[in-house]
Image 1 (cartoon, one colour):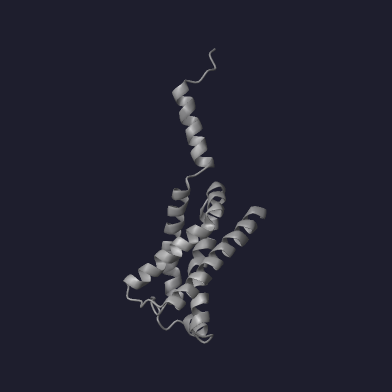
Image 2 (cartoon, helix red, strand yellow):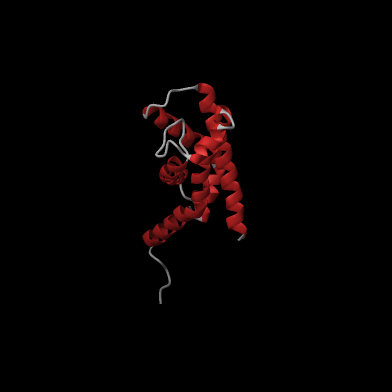
Length: 156
């Protein structure tokens, strides 16, 4: 009996395996952006960002504002991107997480910048210092959240 596989079938199988083991960074980034998009609705329900949200009289918003506007923006950014980062650990597969960990800083910075642009589209006035504070908290929280929860998932 002939055990040889047709060459085109062999190449197709190898290509499928390679794409599953080494997902393209753009596919991982798009998945991350979609996860963040849905996570943002959760965050905007409990914590307004720059007075933009579904619950403007949020208890959490009042607590964070009591720390001062700059600290509030850092914490709000951290909550905003941090939640999406943590959720992504449980949605993305092992190989996608491996790719994401290689591109996490530019990915989270880009998604944070896109979120800030969306906030401005919805009427938030641009304030450089507050936006940078928000973005700093957002990116640090997202990277830290990804790394911590990835390790928890990896070792559990």
